[in-house]
Image (tube, rainbow, N blue to C red; front, side):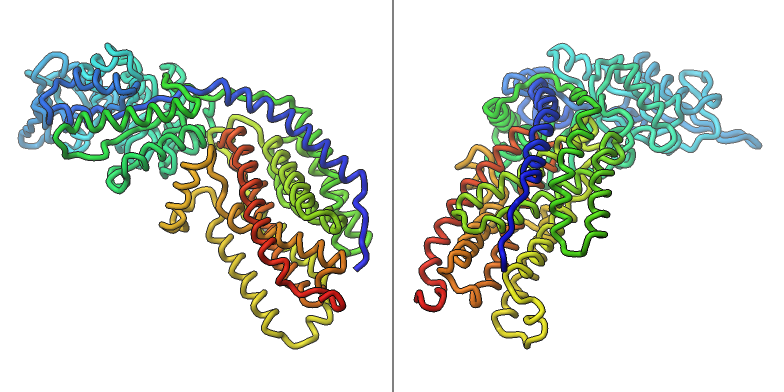
Length: 617
C-alpha cells in the first residue's frame, strides 16, 4: 500500500484546538483549586448509640469525634410518631354518634407542644384546633398524623451548634406535603442551624410539584443540597439541574457495604471519593457495631480518613458549592472551529468520494460554529472524542517508518488533544455536580476502534481477496479475539458499573493505588497501551521490509485495534468531568508510562520470534 503524507493544516488544527481547550480549562482548574473544603460527617443516631454503649453523654461523644477529625453531623427530623414512641406526645381518639372521628395530640412539655402545633398546622390547614390539654385534628387518618414531620430535635441541634459542627438536616417527603409544609420544614431546619439538606428515603422533599418551593426555601435559608453519589432519588436530578450553585456531592457507604470493608479499604474508599471525584461531604458509618470501645473504634476510622484526605491536598472545613468557571462564550466555538479541520481530515479519510467529503466538511463546520450554543456543544464534543483517536492512527500510518516509541507518544498526544477538546467544550458548573454528563461515552469508545480496524484492514490487507477466499484458522482466531475485546469494552464501559470488576482486579487496583500517586485505568495499562506498542512495532517492521506483511498483516490490525482501546480510554478519562483536571491528566500520564513500559517489554520478547520477510530469515 502506498504511503501518504499528513497535511500541515491537520497538524495545526490539532495544536490550535488543544491550546484553546487548555485556555478554557484554566478556568476550571482555578475553580477546583478554590474548593478544597471537605465535610467529614457522622450520623447523630450512630454517635448517640455508640456513646450509650460506652457510658458517655452524647455531648462528650461529639467532642471525641470532633477531636478525631469529624466536623459535621447528620440528624434526621422526628415525626409525631417518633415523638410518641419517646413519650413526648400522646395521640388519643374520640367520637360521638353522627360525627367524624377526632384525634387529639397531647404533648408532655410546652416545647414539644410548640413543635407539634407548627408541624400539624403547616400540613393540615383548617383541620387543627385547640382542645383540652392539646390539639384536635379532624378527618385525618391517624397514620398521616403519626408520619407528619415534626422537625429536628432542638436539643440535639443545640449540642451540635455548640461545637460549631456542620449540621446536615435529613428531611423526608411523606405523602400530602403542601408547598407551605415544604417551606416550613426547610425553614425550621435552617432556624435550628442546619447548613445542608440531605434527602432521606426515595424522594427529595417536595417531589414532584413542590420542587420550586424547596429551592426557594433552600435559597431563603442559605442552605446547600447534598446530592448522594450513586443513589437513585426522585427529584435529585431536578435540584442538580435547577440549582447547581447550591449543590455539594456526598459519598456514603451503606451499613452492608461497610461490613465488608477493612479499615484501609474504607479509608481509601472515602478519600478517593473526595480527591478523585470532587465529593465534598463524606458521611462515615461505623465499621464495627460491637467492640470493647465501639465509639473509640469509630473515632479511629474518622481520624484515619481525615489524615488521608489532608494528605491528598484537601482540608477538613465546612463544604461549599463549586463556582461557575465563567468561560468566555466565544471560546467554545473557537475550540469547535479549530478542531474542525482535524475532524474533516478524519472523515475525509473514508473513501466515499467528493460528495461525502463535502458533507463531512459542512457537518464539522456547523458543529464548530454551533458550539456557541450549550445544546450543540455535546455533539461537537462527541465528534472530537470519536475523531481525534482516529486521526492519531492516520498520522501514525503516514509515518509508519518512525520509531514505534515516537509513534506511540505522538498518537497518545493526539488522543489527549481530543480529550482536552471534550473537557474544554463541556466546561461548566452543571458538569461539575453531574447535573449534566458526557452522554456519548459508548459511541466514543466503539466508533474509533471500528474505524481503526476497517482502515488498517484496508491499508494492510487485500480485503476483497480475503472476503472471497475461505476462512483459515488464523483469521478465525483474530475474529474471535476481536469479538472478545469488543465484548470486554461493552461490559466495562460506563461511569458506574462496579459489577463488571472482578475480585482479582480489585486487588490489583489496590496494589496500584498503593504504589502510584493516581491509579491508571486498567484497560490502558494492561491491554490498550501494550497492544499499541506491539502493533506499532509490527507496523514499522513491515514498512521497513523486515517482517512478513503476508503473515503479520492480520495480527498487526488486531494489535492496533486493541491499541485503539487505550487511545479512546485516554479521551474518556477527560470525559469524566466531575474528576479534578489534575487527577485526570496525572492518570493519563501514569497510564502512558506504565503501559508503554509493559508494551516495550512485550515487544522485546516477541520481535525475534515473528516471521521475517522472505530472504531475511
